[in-house]
Each structure stands twice: as structure tokens, then as C-alpha cells.
Length: 237
Image 1: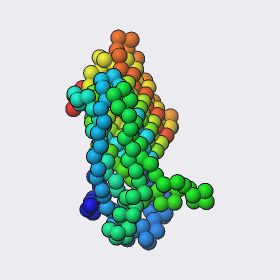
Image 2: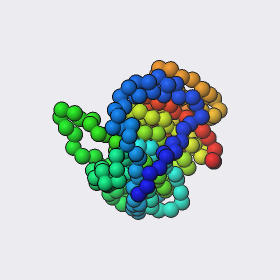
Image 3: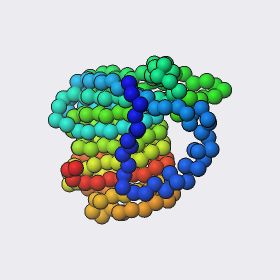
């Protein structure tokens, strides 16, 4: 366990929403949270997943990086990140979050399990607890992902993708543009950016979207973001 400076990936577009919200976030910081340090604990998990199977990811707080590879399994590196005044207090917070990887072969489910919420203060303490994931999965398997608050980056997949993020940026690599059958990406408040031929290059505001159809393709990608950006780029990295 160590204290770290968190390095976040970001798409190339300027985050106008970040500037809008940063002032209000500063107002919410208490003296205790300012004094807290950041601690991490990393664990690794694996499960067998065949080609054309499905990985289902359900996470609440933290960034997710997913990479396709030519192996019949899912490998997960989970980095729990907590803010605490001491290492002893950090250990207690680590124990509050569980990483659950279940299933094999045709379907694997990955989720983070947080402690039960108080009815009086349902979101108390959640900002102190997050899990960042680095995931490798079969490049031709399908992906379904839900994330409440965090950035998502997906590269090297040719299977179906369904990505839903409440607050954060989504970055998607399309390895073979000619294989893409449909792209349906919407953000309620944010930006969309793409280097795919025939799609809008860069726009921001309310209800931004990217739409693409190719009857000869085989891959379908659906993205829904409430507040944040969508960046789609084609070809190998």
C-alpha cells in the first residue's frame, strides 16, 4: 500500500464541464478532506471467457480501462483508492469495498460492492472510496458496462459494446472501421469528438450525438453519457 498521485487519462478535447463544476466542488471540501492522503491497494482477478462471450461490468466510482487481446480469459487489475488521515484508517476503508468477478466461459460479471447506504445520508463517504480497473478481455467478445462516476477507455474490441456512464468521459477505439455496422453515441451535457470519416469532428453543448450506419459491418457500439464527453477514433493505436 502506498500514497500515490493519481494519473488520469483524458480525451484530447477541452472539458468545459470541468471548469463549470470545479468551483462548486471546492466549496464542498471540508478541512478534514483537505488534510486526507490518498492510499491504494491493488488486487488481481481472472476468469475464463470464450470468444463471442460477454463481459458485464458494473462499477460506481473510478476509471475503467479495457483492452482487447487474443486470449480466452479476462484479467482484471483492481486498484482501490481511498482518502484517509492515516494508513490504519485507510485499511478500514479498503475492507468496505469488495471486488466480485463471477461466471466463466460464455458470461463473466465484474462488479464493485459498496457498503449499504444510510437512508438519512445515502452518499456519505462515497467520494472517499473508488476502484480503478485495468481489464484485458477477448477482443471478439461483447462488452456491457455501467459506471456512475469515472472515465472509461476501450481499445481493441470488435464485439458489441454497450457503455453507460453518468459522469465521465468515454474514449472508444474502433480497430476496423469497415467492420463497424452502427455507432450510436449520445451525451446529455458535454462534447463529442471523432476522427472517423463522415462524422462530426468536434462539437459541445446539450444533447450532442454521433451516429453512423454501415449495412456491411458487424460491430455495434452504443454509448450513453449524462455529463461528459465521447471521443471515438479509428484504426490501431
